[in-house]
Length: 116
Length: 114
Image (cartoon, rainbow over all chains, first blue to last red; front, side, top):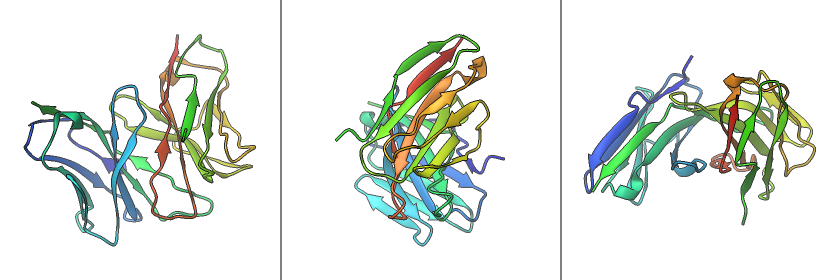
């Protein structure tokens, strides 16, 4: 049962254009959502997050939108740069608990390629 | 500031061998976890710990053991390696006291079982 899904394995955009990466989830208990970026041979690095009480969070060129009724979130990168080329993982977490900790459920990832 | 450190970076094992993947963090985080990354499957949780002496199973725990004797260290043991355990393994840590905080990942261990 894949609770977090990224349906696009890959996305290619031109430098300067907008990149939109999508993520769907099924578990309505998730209350915190994160995006991670991963370069080859490196660990995932945190990019941006959003809690379920918000519908938008912005950090520079990166904006995450959350649509709770549709159980959908998206990451917008504007403008896209060649250095943004990486695998992007969407992750979700239920309310943090003393025994459950910070369990993250990840999507499959989307390979973003930004062409110069 | 080291963050999360994993060793080794690469390892080749023969089927049936055992080994321990090391993970250490210097951020005094209570929560630590192990994930494996396989093509097309994202990162899947193997085991996690909410503090020293406390561990629990994640999504794919079979064939792996963990222990947490200190806050800093969270080793992952492969009891009898199988080709299906060929993967990239990531250790992560995060604080529990701040509810909306990201997890920090190590650089990964690429394991091949032949």
